[in-house]
Length: 219
Image 1 (cartoon, rainbow, N blue to C red):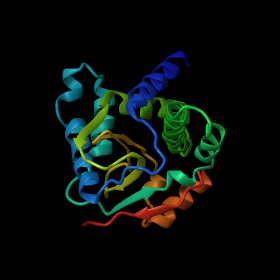
Image 2: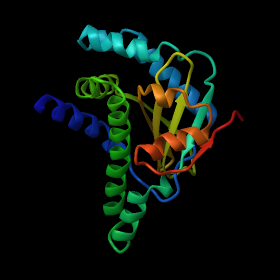
Image 3: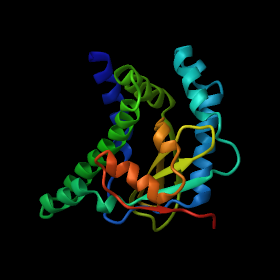
């Protein structure tokens, strides 16, 4: 349990660079594909081996990333502005310094991501050990990307689907002319079977995360 707590904290620390905003940075289809390919390169290359990551974790990462080739079959944007906890935070901290609300919303976004990983694990009969594996794989991958983009502020959440790969969750944060992206695997078989944005929203709702979703199409 102590080890699981430690790797959860490590993953949350990796997300501390994400700052929250009111509207949400828009991620294009091309950027989502680029980030997915970046995750594939990290998972299938020598990055983890050179950092001394156990072979079992490397093997699982390669397995989840194996199908990330070519164009994804579906890219979905989740509307975080509809998430009840985030709306509650904005109301609670309405009169506080903006950075207070930003930190609270960033924590809420991290909470959604951890919850999605937990739901993926609960679909398995070995949920506790699988959740530990999910968190550790994503912590070791630590897939990030930063690029310049004027006018983008706030944050967003996206899911990218490939055949033969675990669903990929991308968090985006735009601030001061730059956008920061962070990707994590959500290895849920039920989520992976979703064929459209409505089914994605239903999977989230059934797991206690009520948000609408919208398909992101190629430009």
